[in-house]
Image (cartoon, rainbow, N blue to C red; front, side, top):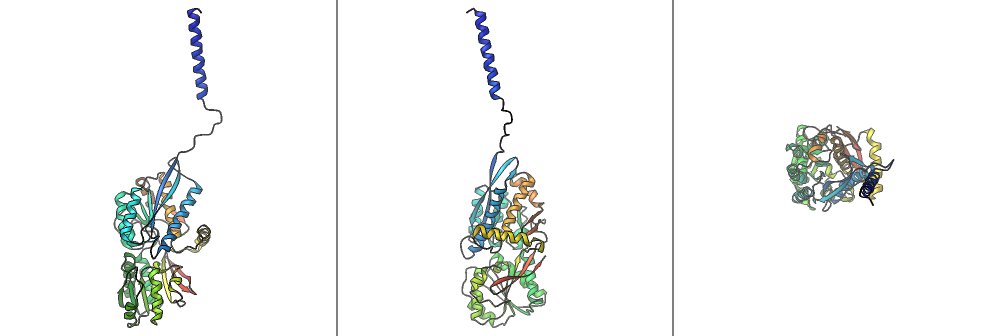
Length: 393
């Protein structure tokens, strides 16, 4: 073949090959756009899922699981990525040291935020670690005022604190129940002592008299000695700062000793399980408590649906704070959406400014991280069942 003709053939072949490559690289007409990238975002939850109040810790954890499942089912896109939320649950057994260990474990796992802890006694020491790590924390149930008064910008709570709760109960004891003489017992935890202190201050301010202050611990089962001392002082009202696992046996022993005083406590005793733990020892309208949180009339249908869905999903009734855990986790995710980022440093300012309507009502935070206009629900027991008396804000 002539050299020039050969070169022309080769050049034509090269051009044809190049043309074919361009055609192959071109996208087909009508092709679907590339799918958004996916990202797994870890959120921690801590509560006592072992020990005497494991029923409350599991209730809280189930509230978190329900929120995670609902968010994943709905589909959330943040920062251009489709998010899959993953719950990392930890057990602190209501023990401060175990609470700190659980916090460190979540920090090491690089969670984007933490919902918890349940108890003030574990929430407060753990909050230092979350603060140092720059991880936002929302407690659904810790009420000791100290938690949000440490100056940590990432510490929040979605319920009213003990200043409101203990104060309301103290005034109610004197002004409504007619308790002129009151005895106070606390379990020496950060929660129990804190709510009892606020109750005592309110009793005195309302004109009542505190005839005795006794102490126990959060694992005690025998109260005969302190109850015998209290019986001699003939109080109209006995207040206990602690949890239902201790209050139940205490009520049984009060009945055995013939003590007929009204029995009061904070949200720690205000559970569906209290009547079981008290084993039939509660008279109607003998026990009064206040739950940190409350549902206004317009929010009742949403709460009833939540309770029904919870029962269907887990095969058990809500004990106490599962709805507040559910809302707390959704509030955290709402802040991520508002900031268009799951980075704690980026979404924290949005969390401070969040305005969210949850199943428990409206949620916004003040400068300390406390819920604005927090509600309290006054409750008594009749026939072993809880009966709401009033919602107070």
